[in-house]
Length: 246
Image (cartoon, rainbow, N blue to C red):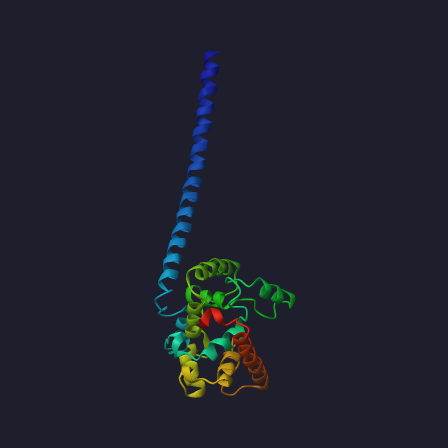
C-alpha cells in the first residue's frame, strides 16, 4: 500500500510538472501579447496627443507618391488661412454630418451597404486617421485599427483640428496635396482667396483626384460641384458647420 501511494504521488507530481511546462509558454505568450497591446495603445495615444498641436510632417500616401513621382506639392497652412467656403464645401462633399457624429457615422455606413458598396461610408475623421496614422488598404485588420484610432482622435482633437489636418493632407490632384497647393495649382490663388465656385470644384474632385480635374471639369464634375455649392450653403445656414467655424 505504501509503495502504491508513493507511486501515485510520483505520477501526480509528474503530471503537474508536465502541465506546468505546457502552461509556461502560453503564459509567456499571453504576457507578451498584453504588453504589445499596452505598448501600442501608449504609442498611439502619444502620437494622437502630439499631432493635436504639432502638424504631421508627412503621411504614407504623400511619401509613397513622392517616391513614385519624384516630387509632390504640399505646403501646410493653418485653417485660419483657408477660405471658410472651402472647409464647408469639403464637409458638404465628404461628410455632411461631420458635426453630428463621434467619428463613425452609422447612418452613412448603412446607406453605403444599402447601395451595395458603391459609395463610401468613411467620415472625415476616419480619412484623417487613415492618411496620418495608417496606410491605404481594405484589410479587416487595417479597418479595425482605423476604427479604434478614430475614436481616440475624436476624443482628443477638436472637430476644427480634424478638418484642418484633412485640408492639408488630402490629395486633390496627382501629386497635389492640401488646400494651398490645390488652390494655386488649379486657380492661381491662395487658399484664402477661393470663391464658392472654385471651392466647390476642388471639393468635387474628392475622393478621386487622379480621375477628376477642377481646372477642366467634366459635365459630371460640374454637376457635382453645383450640388456641393448648395450643400455648403445649407450646412452653414442650418448650423452643421458650427463645430469647425466657432
